Length: 313
Image 1 (tube, rainbow, N blue to C red):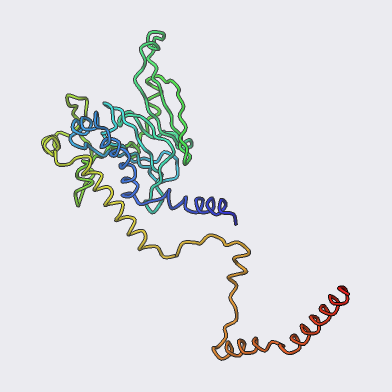
Image 2 (image 1 turned 135 degrees about the horizontal axis):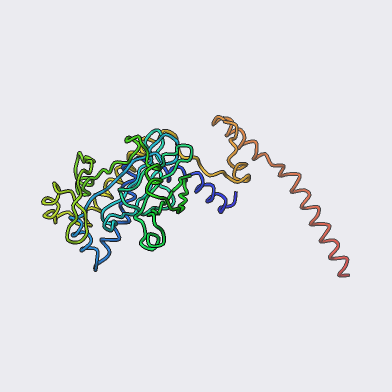
């Protein structure tokens, strides 16, 4: 098989292993490029980190938005949030709890968002504030309704407008279907032994439009030892631990690349022989007919010599 085909086969075969990981490994992979970017930004990186309470929060919501009965996980960090809006990475979750990220992230707040009440058409709905222009052009307020539909790995977004009454009908009546916002301090998640995701009951906004939980404020503002470099080191250690655990738990060896036909012929097993048989084969192979060959050579040489002498006369 050509090397290019072998490489392609290897990539395709490895894709499920790359896409699926346990939740801790998936979250570490999500965090690493964000924190690396902050650590490498000598201008704004330190300011972003400090104003977010030295690392800020990991935030998550869980809701079933594709109708498969499993709640998708929406993950973000306050390091990338702007006021009430955040860029959420969405993870599909299977029955064992492993996660794989959708191909794109979506930007929306943690409030005014819920799964569609119409379960025959699963989607995520975000209702934005009505625009002034549309309010002035109409006697009734109309709200922008953004609808996100999920078919892994794609997320599609559409926009429509609805009255206040229509918006109310879009909201699920089952409170259990409404998302709850959970938060954990990044320093606790990466360096603590028993990090707990807490329900967010109250947000307060700081001077730099950064939200925080009042009970965390004093501790995070003085936690200057937790730097981006410390966070990256913790992430790398956690990822290495996961890799070792995954390697140790592997029950089947990796599938080797298919050899070429020539290589298969070369690697065809030969019948097993004993040392005695090998010696016998070696000795029999040395019984070359030396005498007849020597006579033939002498005769040919004599004929050639005779012809040469005759030609010279």
